[in-house]
Image (cartoon, rainbow, N blue to C red):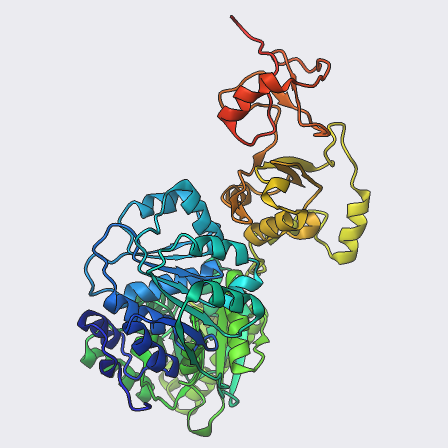
Length: 619
């Protein structure tokens, strides 16, 4: 079993071609056991730790055997997070590159649903989705699961821990009973067992025991950085670290060339290494690195396979790998032959989960490092400059310039020390020895930026104090807050906790900054700070709560589109409307509205807090 290759597993020629092109030869244990089961068309229960190669374990056999000739999805993969959805979609697309007409699409919350609606019209073959957003599309009728031939639940335990149990069950009910099913989970809690018993049918089980990755001789650190500041952070790290050969890992072939070019423009001796390069050029690049003629290589995982260069003392993960196996392989390029190596991981706020996943798999904490400051870089540049000057002083390379310097000093009538200082200043113009560098802003998570700019968000105790001091305005809303409408209520089995969790999860807004929530039968209201950026509000418009579209929008004194001259009672103590003439600021007496009059409006506008009374305006 250990000597088995992918060519021995019975994969289709197109899939096998993609696997070999990617540089993979020996399947992992989960792949060796799972692929034959799925190729036979059987249902599968796989128990394996994250980072063991589960994506290839289910995607390779299903791509080999499914019929993708229809215009509707043939394969569905459910994942717990948007990051994992993107990762799985990229992997499946790379494995399906030689299969004609196979298109993949990642469907997840937080992305503009209009973009997804447009993409779903282009005959998508494989859908990789988070449960909440997929339910949104099912209700809209924008995706059909009627011809799904295989469904996979990836990281089922984490998916159900995040509260997706009902959503997952609702989706599985839409899947044809004849569809092949696979469920992968690192653990087997009761919630996962319930899904297995109800929906998996007859299945074969594959279990892989987790192993500890050993990287004890490598000093591992990570740096938190915003995506737009990664290149600046990289240049600072490269200047502040003492290293011989450096290997930088990125995700795509295109990035190898882009990052290498930008580093060269900043004075570094760098070159790209990717699968697009001819074999002779790849060998030449590695030889230059071995001989010390090249200091930095920017590579992809595939291109770096088999690199064994002793002088590599630093590995930089410019892009976080999506699986722990790749991470261990990457940092294993340093610390060779019993030496101590260094590895630095760049993490964006959205990739915190991947960092935790790596720490869990390697069973070693990765220490945080601060962004190198201008002072640290200045010290390194001065040290390097002194070293260079002393080396040239000892080899006598400046002998022929002595007379020139002496003549300049006499002509200018200045001491030699002043002339030397001027010459040093000219020599360092391209790379200042005392650079003025602005501090990069902290890498806050989405939604945390506006939090830091306000008075609340200063800390737990300060937040509690400020919360107590909040005052209610004349309109019944807390001062500094705005009221928003949500099209879900008690009827939808929604609780305030669900609303807080959805808002905090989608936008990153702290629960302490979410104001009062009021639940009604068919809708709810929530108060949010008026300083919430427009970008976050647009994200919240696309969110779902317990699988229901939120219909999130600002509560204003304007009626829904197409209805004029009505306002919503700000207090919402009753589900009623009052009428308003023109732009007058005086209210008429509020009075209940008869059920007879409100019925036609209700039928035409669904669950809204608006009810029709009388209409004013021009006849």
